[in-house]
Length: 128
Image 1 (cartoon, one colour):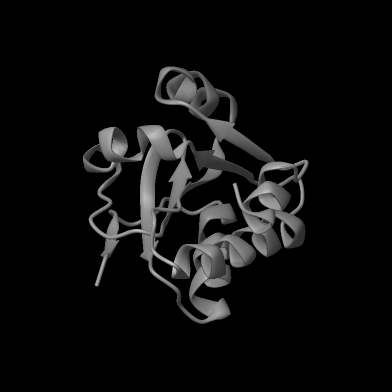
Image 2 (image 1 turned 90 degrees about the vertical axis):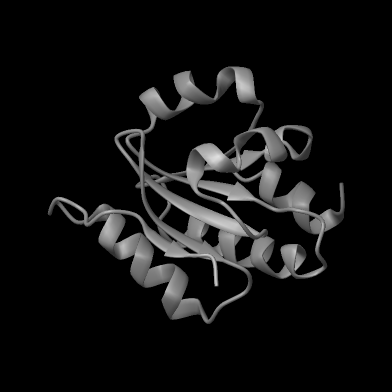
């Protein structure tokens, strides 16, 4: 892994996830982000953003860094078409998806909505 990915993986609010453990992890983490890094260079930029989200929202949401060996097998399940992608999860269900590198407010406002008590809208297909 690169140093940026290693730093995210070592963050106290982050877990590196394999496909076999994902459902149990989601059951234990009602508000979470799933991060599909992919193999594009911008994945490292999004890694920095995800690490900042983990820090800024410390303890209120967990980050699941999907092991790159399992990304392809999980993409369809979570509506991921383009990587890197951050899938915002509430009670085991995807509520929003942000694909590729975007401005900070796109990521942080989606996190704010995730942490609100209101019932979320259906999944936003932000794969554009």
